Amino acid sequence: MLTLSVAAYLSKLLAGMCLLTLVLSRQKQLRDRLPILKTIDGRQLWLVVAACLAWILGSGANAWKERLESEASLALSQGPNGELVQKATAAALRGELTRAPSALDGQAKDGFDAAERDLAAMRYPEAASNYERSVRAAPTVAGYLNLGVTLLYLSEFRRAESALLSGLFGARQEAADRIEGAYLDALGRAYLGQGRLQAALESHRAALEVHTRVGNPVGRANAHANIGNVLLAQGRPGEALLSHREAFRLYTRLENPMGRANALNCIGGVYFMQHEQEEALGALQEALSLNRRIGNLLGQARDLAGISSVYLAQGKRSEALEALRQSQAIRDQLGMAVRSDPNGGSVIDQTKAAGTAAR
Figure 1: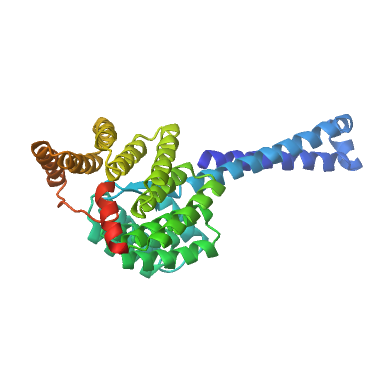
Figure 2 (figure 1 turned 120 degrees about the horizontal axis):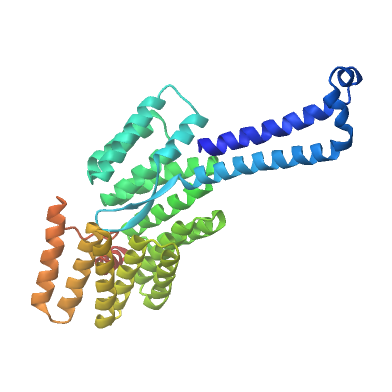
């Protein structure tokens, strides 16, 4: 960031010096005192060209800096059951507090930073409490997004919806399109958790439109996965499979192994709901292998829970119990209880729960 800022400053300084030299070369008294200015006459065109190029380079550096800052506003977060969500970063919060400083900025930052540490350590109740402390001090778009995401992880879907709607209003006021897409995706998860399947689908599709417009490929991949989850809950497995395959394609192109594993888990869930158990098992085992390779314990626990469900459907009770035992062992290692909720766990559990809530 600093390098880009210096490059922009120096480029525009050079442009200013070129133009100043041109002006000075037109002053007769200065030309008599400074003979070097007499040589400028034949080179005026080149000075103008140099000034224009320097200004363009400076503006380009500023534009690139703004682009990098925009892309740094979001990060991919993994929930307690291996689900992937986009959340705001500390850089996004800093940008907001810089644009609209207040006497309580320090408290907002302290609460946000504490919540980030809690979230990384999977202390979700503490994280939610600290994000709430942050938005009470200064109601930031970044703070409300992360509060909503954390409440999703706690399965507090109505509270998550309330926090996300508050922040979405602010994001739209600030024309923060990139973060708006993340809000819409998170809202879709909140609606799915409440069994409001059509609202969830509309929110995820709106998110996909925003992600496509602003150039957020990770957001696009995640939105396709979320759309697939809702379509499956609606009893539309064929369409769901297409959506999850598109998510897998995008994550493969992005060389994001965690996203690829997430998409494979979702694909396995679709096959399971279609009673194609061998295909389901293959996709889930591939996801498990990928998560083991990258050391993603939450993803492994989720894949093993899905594999257990497939084995049970195949009548392989001992294999099912062993897969479930391994899943529980990982969660014990992480200090987490086994949970099966409509916005996490394997897609198998997710779809069953969402369908029940919708009825």
